[in-house]
Image (cartoon, rainbow, N blue to C red; front, top):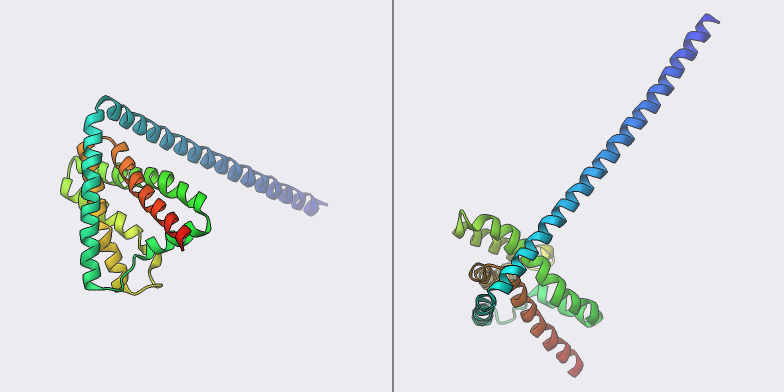
Length: 219
């Protein structure tokens, strides 16, 4: 009886201890979940304030933002066509694998892809590449800000195709994205608002999307 009594006490302690561990783990999970939720809310507030502040700058200095976006648009097309002509001179059979993939998805679901290309992509890409990456470095190291943001922007447009295409083709695709990325960063600096490069990229994507839709309709 004495042994059974102590065995029962030890078993009860193990059960209580197990319940305690479960409660502690559950409490830690709830705390971590709350921390993640707080971090998301904080990030949302920061981006929300950042976008509102940028919008106020654009509204208070509309001519500056329009001039930067307009001149940036001109430089965008000139530099892009010049780089594309140079790439075709190097490789006459070249095609941009990312653009080709987007064109295929646009043909399958033109409504969703048009919305993504014209609205979602300009906002998310410019906030990430120009607002976060470029903006946090530019005030201290301007040249490094251009180099890092441009490399980051170009690399993320081709990195998903590694192993599917030749390294030379991916390198040429990477190079093709360099001039547009530089112009978008320059537009952000000149306009002093993220909405200028967002509007610029949205307009470029609109032109490209409409051209592709017309091409699909004719073929």
